[in-house]
Length: 160
Image (tube, rainbow, N blue to C red; front, top):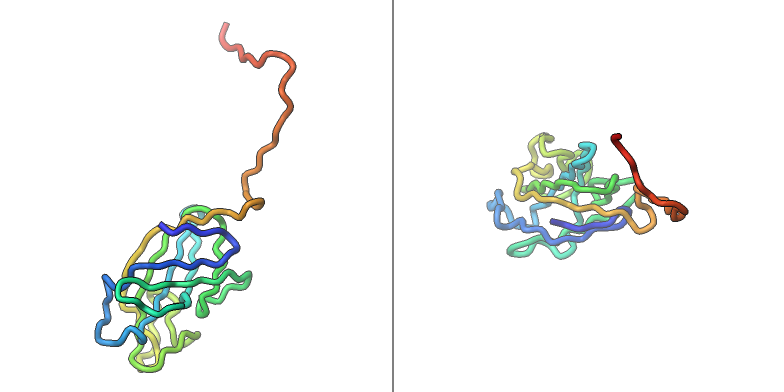
């Protein structure tokens, strides 16, 4: 489970190499498309995370940047509301130059681009899990009101 806070960036290590699909290309030709699904309202967000340290033998360090105007191709996200989000990580491979931009990188796991060495191909899902997104302190959606203590007893009578 990944822990994160709303309106902030997110950096995480996710196991991706255990289930690597396209082993015919070098790890430098691989990027990951991450799909976030909100458990509460079913909203979906996609992003290609920034691979800050590249792909390691067992895991990949993925960084997402908070932005009020998200850009999935540069790893900018705006996840809202707080709560449990499921995430799915899809492997995308290139045989030529890797460019994570519109028209050269698939926008969803079912997006099929024209076949060329310059477009990415979704190979399949490599891992999935849960993201627990907590609200920043002071922005909680549930607010409580404190009332003064009653002067008399607080009994509730029912029946006869």
